Figure 1 (cartoon, rainbow, N blue to C red):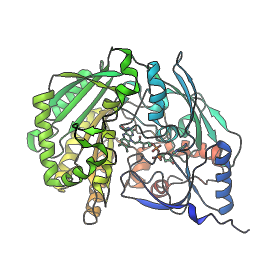
Figure 2: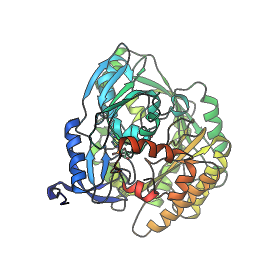
Figure 3: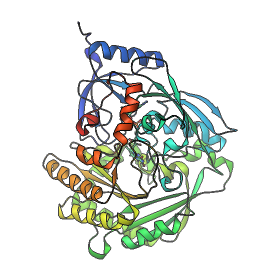
Figure 4: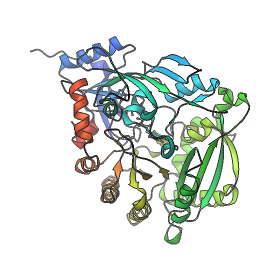
Length: 467
Ligand SMILES: Cc1cc2nc3c(=O)[nH]c(=O)nc-3n(C[C@H](O)[C@H](O)[C@H](O)COP(=O)(O)OP(=O)(O)OC[C@H]3O[C@@H](n4cnc5c(N)ncnc54)[C@H](O)[C@@H]3O)c2cc1C
C-alpha cells in the first residue's frame, strides 16, 4: 500500500505549557466536524497517529507527539446554544472557558469549575477533567456536564454520551486517548453578582494551613492557599490562605467591563512586558526574598481582612501576566502536583517541602487545594489535598529536577496518592499505573469504541505506557 504523504508546510514544533518538552507534528486545524473527519482519514491514509490538542495549556507532553498528526480543535470554538433560563450552554469543543464566561456572565451565570487560567478549551478541560478552587465542594468539570458529543476516529457518526452512559466517565478524563470530543452541553452556576468576597488568613505553618481549610470547608465557595516553599523549621508550610464566597452586588458587576483584567500591572507596567521583569527575578536567591516578602505582606495587609474581587480576577490570577511562562525560558519549568488523602497530607507535604529544600531546588510557587473523590476513569481526585510545586528547568539542573520530581511522586504514591496528567511531565509509568486502579481498563474500553484502530496517542501516553 502506498502511504499518502502529508504536506510539509503543516509541520510545526509544539511544546507543552511548561516549555520543557517539545515535538514536531503535522498540525491541522479543522473548523467543522466534517473537516475533523477528513483530518482523521488523512492520518490513517498516511499511517500516522493522531494527537488531539486544545489550547496547549497542559504543562507537559499531553498534547504533543513526535511526527504525529496534531488535530488542533481551537477553531471549532462556537457557542452554539445558550439558555439563560436553565443555565445550559452548548458549545463546540474548542470554545474556551473565556468564551464561556464572556457569553454567560452578563446573564448571571458562571462556569461551575474553572482552572487557574481561562484559556483552556472545553474539550481539553474535559479530557483532563479539570478542577478548580471549589473542587472540595462541586468536584470536577465533568460532574457538571449534561452530555458530550464524541467523534469516533474511524469517521463514524458522532455519538452523544451523558453521565449515565458507561463510557462517559472514560472519555471525560481520558487525556485525549478515548475519543475526540467535538461538542459539550454544560450546566453553568447561577451567581448573585460578578464578584466574590475574599478573606485572607495568614498561616505561620502547616497547622494553620490545615486548620484554615477545615474551618472554611463547610461554608466557603472557594478555598486555595499559597505556600512559601523556602520557609524552614517551624515556619515550614507557612503561607497565605484565601476563602471566597459568591457575593451579592449590582448587576453591572456581571458585565465584561467590570471583569476585564487591567492592561497594566500596578497601573504602570504594561501586562505584556511584565514577564521580562519576572525573568530577572526568576532565580533562587530572588525568589527566596520574594516569597518572604509575600508572606510578610500577607500577615500585615491581608490577615483576617475581607475584600471584593471580580470573579475573573479571583479565578484567573495567572492571566494577569500574559506569557509569564517565558520567565522560565529557555529551559522551561515543570509542575509537580500530587494529590494525597487527608490523613496523610500534612506529613507528605512537609516531607516534600524538605525534599526540595535538601535538593536546593525550592519551588518558586507552591499552591495547596482541597479535593474530593469522583467517578472518572483517570481521576486525580482524592478525599484530601493537592500541593502543586513549580520547578525551573535548566540544562544544568534537568536531571536533578527529574530525580526530585520522582521522589515527590513516590512519597505521594506510598501514601495512597494520585497524579494529574494535565500537570505531569516526568511521571514514572509504573507509578502512574499503580495509582490509577482499574482506570486504564476503563480507558481501553472507551478506546475500543471510539478509537478502534488505536490511532490516538500523545507523547505522554507513550511515556507512561497508557496505550
Ligand atoms: C496557568 C495554568 C493554570 C492551570 N490551572 C489549573 C487548575 O487550577 N486546575 C486544573 O485542573 N488544571 C489547571 N491547569 C491545566 C489546564 O486546565 C489543563 O491542562 C487543560 O486540559 C488545558 O486545556 P487545553 O484546551 O489547553 O488542552 P491541551 O493542553 O491542548 O490538551 C489537554 C489534553 O486534552 C486532549 N484534548 C484536547 N482537546 C480534546 C478534545 N476536543 N477531545 C478530546 N481530547 C482532547 C489532548 O490530547 C490532551 O491530552 C492550568 C494550566 C495552566 C497553564
